[in-house]
Length: 314
Image: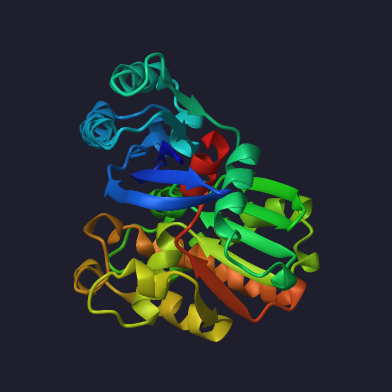
């Protein structure tokens, strides 16, 4: 008999739930869900979590807890990433989260994880279905406030770094026009290159054979490149894109205005205003991984840190 677990990933832009059964060393999905709550709204500028953002997150988490209770979840783990690591008032968030999670498992609390653990959980979730012969892998988890770069293979993680840049952070800092001006885009690319250079100084990506991208920016890029009429996770999962295709879809999104991005069939409304920033980071990543490792394609995975969290408690 398998064990039913609940995993919650609360990032800068979204909060996500996975309810899964663990049996025979693998996970079987029962329910997946994602909501855009923008917990990191303004945190880069103010150093604090916005009370409205905490309330949006509470409403989503309350619903997730109801789903986990109804599904008979036996163990739960909730991790909070970049936005809460940076916030002075993070205790307000954690008090709220503990109150909600305690309705599933007594004493359950959200936890801030380090960038290093975030990277390792992302790696565990991302490469589980890929042939070990395609390794070593460089897994990139492009989030709202941070981007994790992880090198590893079937033996595990060899190096990891959490870069202080993500689609929300770069948008709030650099991309203010609609569409952004060439000067704003150039500033964003420079900012992304600077922050990612720190990651490449720690993670020897030149050893990698395969690039795997996870999280909402990457999956949205794949869905737009596939010209899907609406978002379809099954079609997106394990999509392979040439780096020329990655650059083309990134340039297309960067050059669009808000209404043009919103009109794209697979575009989640909560990503419309930050997908251009994510595209800038993805474009820089494509150029750097081609130059440093000779990598020619991107594999986009729907499985990521959420699956890693579930595996860690299973």
